[in-house]
Image 1 (cartoon, rainbow over the protein chains, first blue to last red):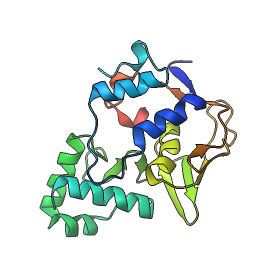
Image 2: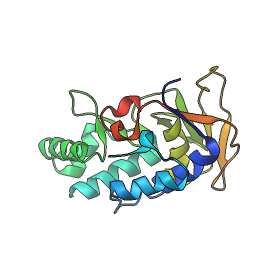
Image 3: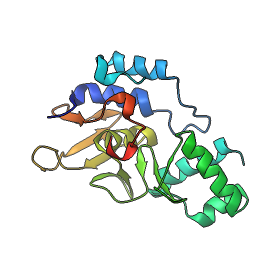
Image 4: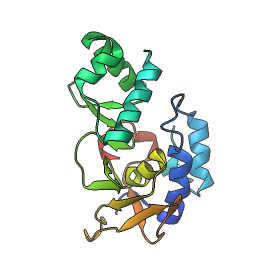
Length: 52
Length: 144
């Protein structure tokens, strides 16, 4: 199967970190570096998960 | 209303109504048809929302989809369409509600039967499959 399968146990904290502030009227996308750290924090490292 | 305020109104509308605001609402908020279209295209370019290909309609404001999909999130009397499995998890987080997630597992098509309650996911059995490397997520957001 092409791609990567991420366990729900990692998806949930990733989702909370990525999306919890999306309805904030002052929401601004974080920097690629910050999003990369969010991915790393749940174990998503390696070439497939590099944002830039 | 500046672009940031318009973005916030669009997101609030999705959260409340489960789909995109109409052209009439957008024009009212932006002060006319031309300013509305110009603002939507700026927001699209800024990746704050996704316009339908070749048109001025809002297709997505991640994690929300303006159009029906196979990933449905329900909470009380509200429902939303998600663009993908990740977005189905993201909608209860974004809106801040308990919700059920109705979507098929990719491998056998059976219902996932997931729910979010009190900020927790009902089960961690299963996987979300990503087919596109992270660096290309915005190249074609419809397939991510």
